[in-house]
Each structure stands twice: as C-alpha cells, then as structure tokens.
Length: 202
Image (tube, rainbow, N blue to C red):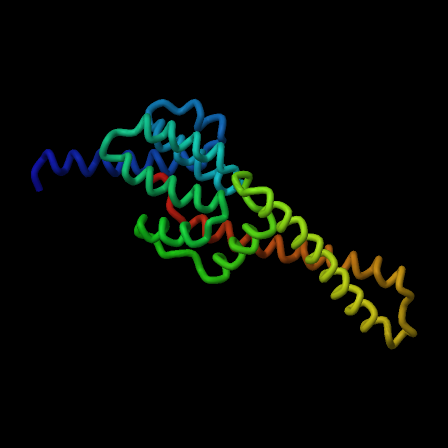
C-alpha cells in the first residue's frame, strides 16, 4: 500500500473514532465543538429529530452542511433527509431516505407507529384540518381505551359481584393508563434499539 493511501486511511480511522466519541457528549459540548463541527451539528440535528422538533433539526443540518467539507455534504444531506422525515412523521419518505443512506429500512411495525403518530400528533407544518383530525382521533382513542378498560375491570370483578359504573370507569381509567405506560416503555426501548442501528454522523 502506498504511504499516501495508508496515511489517508489512518486519518479516516482517527476521524471515525473522534466522531464516535462525539455521540457520547452532551448538547452543550457538541455546540462548543470546533474540530469536527459538521459532525457535531449533525448529531444535534439527529437528536432534535428524535424529539420530533423539525425546526431545530433543520437548523442544525443547515449549519452542518455549511461547516462541512464538500465531500461530506452529500452524506449530511442524506442524513438530514432521513432525520427530517422522522421529525415530520413522514413514514414513506423516511423509508426512502434511510435506504439512500445504505441502511436497512425501518420495520413494518415502526412504520405503522410513525404513521399513527403522524395522524394523532401531526407536525407543526400540517394544516388546521390535520390538527383537528388529530384531536378528534385522540378523543376517540381515549373513549375506546376507557371502554376497553371498563370491560376488563367488569369482567374481572364479575366473580365478586361486579362493580358500579363510576368505580368501574375509575378502575378502567387506571387500567388504560397502566397499559399505555407499558406500551410507551416498550416502544421507547425498541426505538432506542433501532436508533443505535440507524444512520449516525459517522
């Protein structure tokens, strides 16, 4: 191997290790990064997209592209496309963007969850119709969860003589809250596991 090629590979390996170390830093430390500024801003953009903050993510990626070297900009743009699709709950665009990055697309379950979130909690850029629709769907979902919780509680209490409507609704509400909490914890763990395999600023 030629000395120049060896030197380039060593430099690339060193940069890769430094960027991996950046992922462990806080947001404040990433903002202060100067040597690998484009990578630090890209990580901040990805973190903002995980919080579904599309405006912040877009701002970070614009700064990252401006700070990047010409040969890095295409990859950062692709990463920005995937991150913004996630932040704006655009499941179809997310799948295409992740595939362009050369990564495996999100699973069918993850895509379904993102589509459902897009319906229930549309992004800020969505119109008033989408927001009203989201509110109506959330209300309907709450009613369905209460009905299911009431049904389960009444079924369990039948051997003990049953419950009245008021205590049944109350216990059904507690049951629904517990079920949602469990689902959120499981979903968060799965999302964190998927994000470890998702595209990063490397």
